[in-house]
Length: 416
Image (cartoon, rainbow, N blue to C red; front, side, top):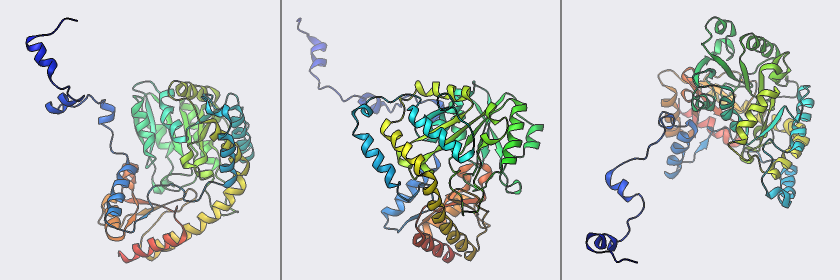
């Protein structure tokens, strides 16, 4: 090999610099996409930072912020996972659309629960949690520049998923005077151009409002006339209160909804499986197929052992939901009584494990949430994080045991 000399030899004698050191020295930054730079901070990540800062100061924090069930996953589901995880055939890539046995179990559960017929081969796709399906839906249904109606207040992922797909999120106000449902009559008169899809969510996060089958029928008729795809986030249909209360319906129970609808379900809330990341979508076969096609190009499906555990969850879901609903009903009463004692107004909760309450006068929702955390160590979610129409409200989650909820309410009362 020819020996280098002169400046080349000198350069070659230098110690190699760490990768990226030149960029750091010049103060340069890598090019980040505009869609990422334009995103607001994710609400729950922001709350977690504030909570962790309080914990580091030694505060006894009671978190009523994120909706993460504290109740354990039912034992039969855990045992089913343990058995399935030992099967070598489950250690390989899963099927993209989900095990047919899982999809069949999901379809049968929908038949028992909602009285709807679902073809397990063409009208069901497994999801890595319903959030994943919701986030990918606009990629399947929107072209760049198309509009999508996004509920406000609402789950932040609806809006960001539309932005990621190059669509135009159009605010769909949910007002207390309308029972936190969209005013479809008003919407008919001012529908945005190129409106291709809309998100709805009942029982509703964050307001706790429910929807009747009559409302879903009105929505289905509206969407069919306008050629709009309805994406119903049904994650909370199994969180309702009391044996005698009406079970929340599926959007797909409405006549004609199967022509324009897709519905997202989750075992996260139904069987306390938030960390497992397992859900499914059902509905119009073309919509389910389009979502499945997006997924085959983005992810490799759900670990098959978790799908087998999901089958076990469907088998015990009815009994588990009845037990869980009784626990949540007791907790809801504790929070509502505590808010009354603290002089804080709140809205009716038909379902979900949330209470949507009104911020006392003289505060924004974020100011109030920070005040509550600073003075009481209780974490609540400011309403503005769910959209402009969430301002003036805050959300409480009842995923703590009764003793902790009573303590939290006692602290709120002392704040007056």
